Image (tube, rainbow, N blue to C red; front, side):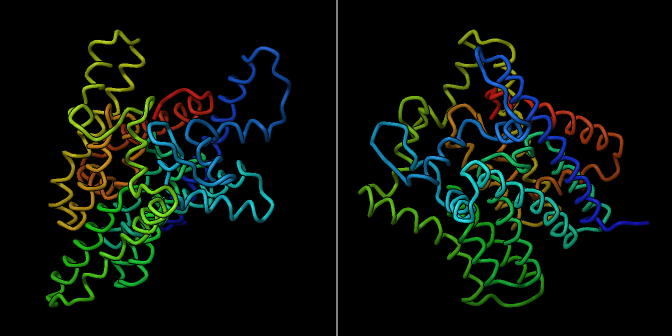
Length: 377
């Protein structure tokens, strides 16, 4: 029996969610097992531990205690408020803070992949949409969509939903979702420019004149603006989330050292790091370059609206990172790239199968590594 692309992707994503969760739990078990004097834990504990590491602690702090800020010190204001608020909603229903965080990602991530496929069907045939969905679902860093206590799954769901509604002609709901999404991550310029550019292109392709309502996507910045106003009112520093990025340990203050990736060159060529560390830095840098290179074919095949969005959603974090770390994860948000790649590989099935196969293996391995609390993104 033939399945529609979204239904097929739903099955793939279900399997990926289960397998990645098991791999992360196994990694957590291995980490815990090696800890001297560690007590035995139940299976549910390992499943929870597997998806909670690194920045999860910041989200836990915000969900439980709210924001704190001290200039020159790593502070929770670096993390935008929508995801912690979603965690609080589950906590109000009786879930623990960790369970709440994992549940938000489990609900949002798989749905985002399926909805991405539905969005792709508005642009291409069903077979190509399915291929694009597979590329996204089995992209190695997509394990962040399958339960990790990070904000990525929530953000991706919102931004894909916004563009899906925009393609259907529902401008106001698209802008509302866009505004909500900018309260999740500091990439408001990408969301605003992307929605605005695509709306104008959408009207132009239909031979319709632009009017004042077509510029409504600028209101997508409201989520970002509300957080800036909150920081100014509470801490007297509207852009505290930028200032705290330069604190010791993060060391990502805006400036030439960050923009020209001095730390990346030092880590790769001068610091004498182990091969696995160098490979990690190089991998994130290479993925960033590939994403930027794909902007042009995105323009050619999907239009200038999605090219503008892709360039911005990749460019904002790429400029702001000192060493490209995290870019592999951030590229999940550049969802048009996965459709562009599917179109480029449409007549190259062997290459596509190889990429999907390698991606699937990487997806499981990175899930296991995250469960072991290895620094991968």
